[in-house]
Image (cartoon, rainbow, N blue to C red; front, side, top):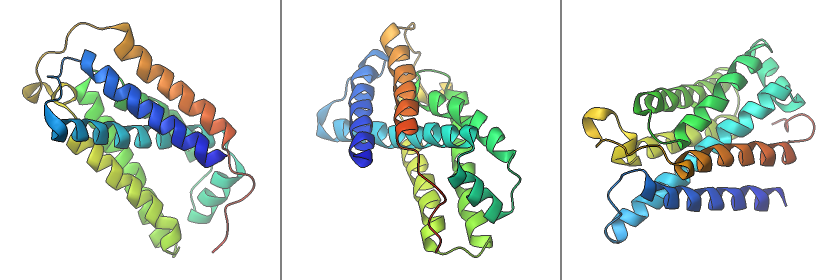
Length: 195
C-alpha cells in the first residue's frame, strides 16, 4: 500500500509538471525525443523533491529511524533540525518556476546531502545496502539538473520567463504539500534493519 501511494504521487506530480511546463515559457516540446526528455526531467525532479520533502519530515519529527542512523554515524541529533529545515525549501525550489540561481543552490545542496550521506556510511564501515541509496539519489539529482529546460537554467542560457501564473506556482506548492502528507503516512516504524 505504501509503495502504491508513493508511486501514484510521483506519477501524478510528474504528469502535473509536464503539463505546467507549457506555461513557463519554454518552446513546446517538438517530437518524441523532446517529450521523453521533458517527462524524464520531471520524473527525476519529482523523485528528488519527494525524497527531500519526506526526508525533511522524518528529520523534523526526529523519528527513531533517523535518530538511530545519525547516532550510528556519529553525528549529533541536532543535525536533524538543520537538515530538515533546509530540505523543505530545497524541494520547493526544484519544483517552482524561475529562480534559476536558487535552483543551482538547491541542486548543489541535494547533491552534497546525498554524497555526504553515502560517504558517511562508507566511513562508518556500512555495507552497500546503506550507501547505495544516497548515491542513487545523487545520480537522480544530476540527471534532473542535466535535463532541466532552458527556463530553469541561469539567465545567460534561458529566455525571459513570462509573468507569474497561478498554475505554475500552485502546482509545485501543492505537490510538495502532497509529498509531505504522503510522507507522514509512510513513516517507517521502529529502527532501521541492522545488517
